[in-house]
Amino acid sequence: MNADEMKKQAAWAALEYIKGDGIVGVGTGSTVNHFIDALATIKGRIEGAVSSSEASTKKMQELGIKVFDLNECNEIEVYVDGADEANSLLELVKGGGGALTREKIIAAASKQFVCIVDATKQVDILGKFPLPVEVIPMARSYVAREIVKLGGQPVYREGVITDNGNVILDVHGMDIMEPIKLEKTLNDIVGVVTNGLFAMRPADVLLVGSEDGTQTVHAK
Ligand SMILES: O=C[C@H](O)[C@H](O)[C@H](O)COP(=O)(O)O
Image 1 (cartoon, protein in one colour):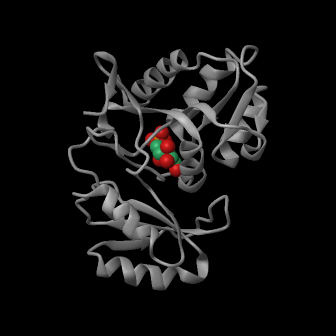
Image 2 (tube, protein in one colour):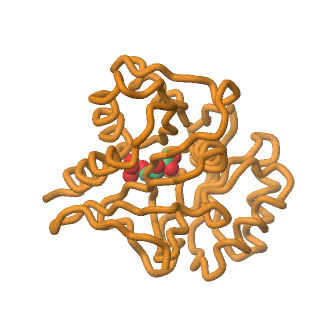
């Protein structure tokens, strides 16, 4: 079984968590694309979705899923999204696809966060995957210098503009021993919009697609 088949397995398993008939929070990425295919099979039962990216919005609209603005919604029951890394506390690194800010907003606005990954995403220590940081364009060099002071090696993701009109720095070389502390420290740098650590608001459930079927993990 390849990684994409494992992603698909985890994505379809997330359907079980869509119990009501309300609005579902939908993340971004190749794993979520499988989830959107799954969600389309129950589109008659749910009211619709809120979306964390233009890409997910487009795919959902093509499949006939109604997409709402988050400002039109109250608390979202369930948010389903992928991740680039997940540890045993279900703290995550996200943003490989550049959608971290809207993802973090919907995660914060949701009661339950179901994270869907393939088995390669599970790690003991976060940070091998370069940590994405979304930055206001004029602050890019300043923020990069501040990140170097924290021990990271920021690399400008050239040619990428986020859905919010900002740029991304991918921070290499960090063993993230204290994810909550680093998430807050990065947030405090002026010019940073969001960082890809989801530790203050980790996932509630992790569905891991693997050779042995989908494993359900709760935070230790
Ligand atoms: O910005 C992108 C998101 O955080 C994705 O959820 C994350 O990068 C995982 O993507 P994929 O499912 O394609 O591996």
